Image 1: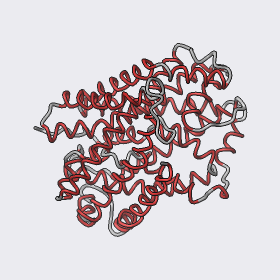
Image 2: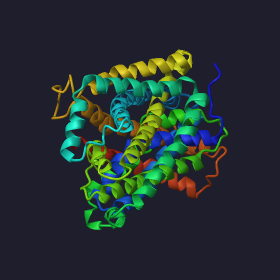
Image 3: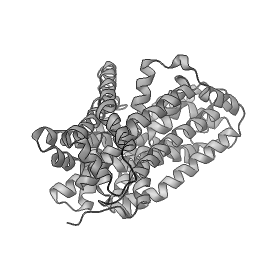
Length: 448
C-alpha cells in the first residue's frame, strides 16, 4: 500500500502548528504569565522552548522521517528489542487516552460556542450567574455527552478524507482563520480602557516570583505546548519525503506557539482589565470570568463568539493531530483502509471519553484524590504518560539509535551545519532534556 505524504512543506508546517497550538497556549499560558512574574516567566519559558522544546521536536520529526512509519513502528524499528516495542505501545496508548479526554473537554468549548452564537451568555452579568450557568450545563448529561460526540465527529470528518484532503487542507483553512481571529481580539483588546494596565500586569518582570517551582512550570509548558511525547510529531514526520527539509518548519512551529501564547495573553487580559475584574486561571477563566466580561461590554456578543471560535479551532486542530497516530498504526500495521481506521479511532476515543463527558453529571460521585474522572484522565496523561513518552523518545533517538546516526539522518536536505547545530542538539538532547524531563516527572508526582 502506497503511504500518504504531505503535499508540500507548508502543509506539514501548518498541520504541526495546528497540533501544537491548543488549550495550553490560549487558556493556560496567560494565567501562568500573569501569576508567575510576567515578562520574567516569559523569559524562562522562551529559554525552556530553546533548551528542550525545539530539540525534542526536531528529534521526534527526525525519527518519523527516518522510519517512514507510525510512532509504534518507529520505536520497534530503531529500538529492536521488546522494551522499545513496549515503549512504542506506551506512546500509542498515550495518544488514544489524550484524544479521549481532550475531546470531552473540547466538547464543553464547542457547547459554549453555541451558547455564544445564540446569545445565551448575554444575561450572565455577574460571576454568580456565570458560575451557576456553567455548573447547570455540566450537570446535564446530554450536554457533555452530546458535544463530546459532535466535536469528535467533526474531528473524524477531517481525518477521514486522508492526509492531504483532510488534515492538510483543513489546517490550511483553519490555521489562518485562527490567527486572524486572534489578531482581531488583540486589536480590540488594545483599544479598550485599562489596556496599558493589563500590559503592565502581564509583562512587567518580577524576578522575585521566579522560584524552582515556577521554572518547572515553564519547562512543562514548553514541553506540552509543542505536542511532544504522544506520537503526534513522530507520525507527522513520517509523512515527510526522505529528502524533505524540516528544521526550519520545527522552528516555525515553536515561534508560532510562542506568538499565539503571548497574543492570547494580551487579548484575554486587556478584555478582563477593561471590566475591572480579577483574572482567574484555567477553566474558570474561560467559562466563568470571560462570559461576565463579554455580557457587560459593548459588542460583547461578537467578542464572545470570536473568542470561542478561536478556542474551538485550537482544540480541533490539536484533536485531529492526536487521532493521527492511532489511524497511522491501523493503516500501517493492520492494513486497514484509512476511512475505516479513522472511524475506528474516533469510536475508541468516544467510548473511552464517555466517562470523562459524564464526570460532572451522572458520574460526578466517582472521584479519587478529590478529582473527578476527567480531571484524573488529565492528571494521569499530563503527569505520567506524556513525560514518560517524551523521555522514551529522547532516549531512543540519542542512546539506542545513536545521536550520530540520528544527526546524519537530520542532515539530509536540511541546513543544519556541523559543529554548531551538532553540539547544540547533542548537549540538549543527550544530557539536558532527559534530566529536565525526569525532574518534571518527579515534581508532578506531588500532584497525586
